[in-house]
Image (cartoon, rainbow, N blue to C red):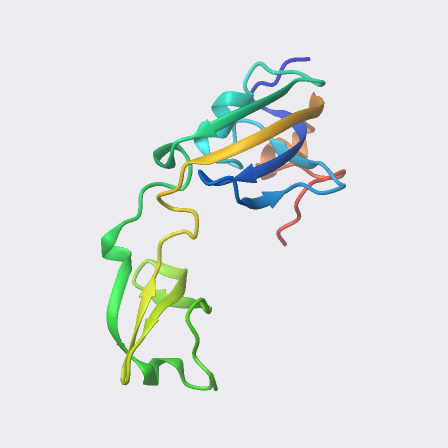
Length: 161
């Protein structure tokens, strides 16, 4: 059975950056996802199309087909430290949920000055070319419920309640 829209696919993978540093891996349990529903980055989903169980491949996805290029307007400096009330020790690398007109989004502190901090709202992998080493474990038809929910259920599925 080939991978196509509305198939539930189980993959094992390792993800490395351009320098070969390990960023993520599936571990013991394969990752299950519903193909064609934007559950993976676009470049990876495109590479998985028409593959089948048992296929193994390595592919590098350019940043623009992964998490996008870094966007400077998402980097904000001069944020007053008072904005982080209740945080005892503000440190570079801390991640916060920030609220804006567009709703909640995740920001990370990239610089700390005397009175202000700099936060970056880009995805932590924005601007990075990502290399995936993939093994396709299983391909099956999705259930009607999975299709209506837009994601895989059951083995290896990710539940976001």
